[in-house]
Amino acid sequence: MIISAKLSLHQFGNSGGANEAQPSWIQVLTTATEWQERTITWNNAPLAWENIGGIRVDPVGNNWKGWPGIPWHWDVSYAVANAYQSGRPVRLILYEADSAYHSGKFFVSSDTGDWNIEGRPTLTVVWGDPQ
Image (cartoon, rainbow, N blue to C red):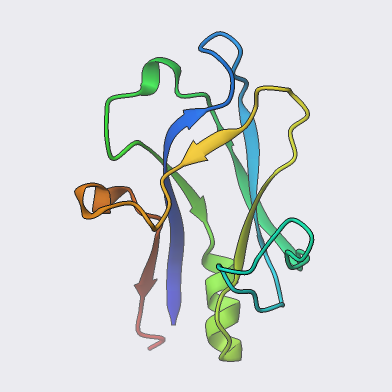
């Protein structure tokens, strides 16, 4: 049984200068469609299936304390539990629909070197006994 699940990303920057960057509302959604990292583009990205939730992500500003970056966490318990129960992989999408010009955020990817392994995106799942 899935007790909880958390998606963690580490932010290292944002668009715009220090006084231009704006906060963002970044949603986490699921998709029912398979996709491949090496072939996905803006034009063939899978459609969102279900909105799981979101968090406000602030600009880096004075929050920067160095690597691995600023940690942000999304509760994806519902999505992981549903995927596990149905025997399918969990497929998550992050989406930022802000309209401010300088609202983009930069996060560490899974391709980062071993020097920043802690900064890689992480899905932490807590299992439990259904008793």
